[in-house]
Amino acid sequence: MIADYDHAVRTIRSARRVVALTGAGISVESGIPDFRSPGGLWSHFDPAEYATLSCFLHDPEKAWRLYRELGRTLLGREPNPAHFALARMSKAGHLAGIVTQNVDGLHQRAGNPLVLEMHGEHGRLQCLGCDLLEPFLPAHLEDGPLPRCRACGEPLKPNVVLFEESVREMLEVARLLDGCDLLLVVGTSAEVYPAAGLPLEVLSQGGSLLEFNLAPTRLTGGGLGRVGALVEGPAGVTLPILAGRLE
Ligand code: ZN
Image 1 (cartoon, rainbow, N blue to C red):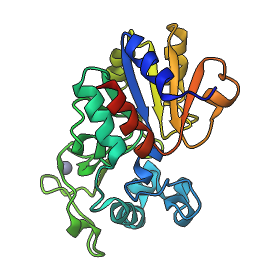
Image 2: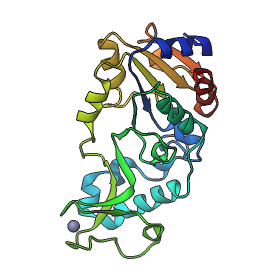
Image 3: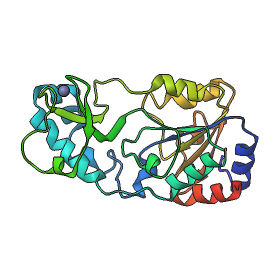
Image 4: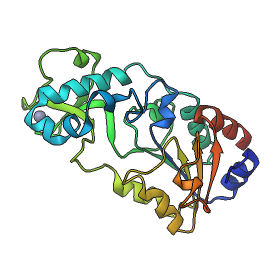
């Protein structure tokens, strides 16, 4: 069903514990195209070829062609009104935390106090040899020698989850979702696991879903449609209205 703002406000006010799950759609308004959209990152770099752990381990020079392109896509991007609206809702006590599939760090930049990044973070480089982390600098985006660990000399990779690597923070995600009776699903169709399991977990606890997307997904449009409601439109428009109504 399509939800109006009165319905959304009532649902949030009557929930005991509200958590948000966000995906690529929330960052599109910050100028970061969904990697899977036409013209997005995956149309230039086949993820099965470039975005795997095997590619990094066997041919880091090749993997870095993707990492540089990803870095240029994310460089200089700023949080948009949707990120700030979630931060307002957190600070007003309406939101317990955010689980995100994004690696752009924009929720934190907008001042959201609790953000769990299932797919890691692009802001730092990671050494798989000795676990050292160091900042990802604009200089790393320039073609040249591979960035290497200053402690052990191994090639560095962005501190993001590659295909064939485990997702992060699942224990913390489970803790955050414990007792959650309302999941806000923002800018994602939540079709890719493990994110796809989160709405199901909240539903299995007797909770409900409130979706903020441009169009219905399987969460509200079919399949799970009886249990979710959609606030239709760009999250950068809908979430600030909602945050304002909640104050
Ligand atoms: Zn190292």
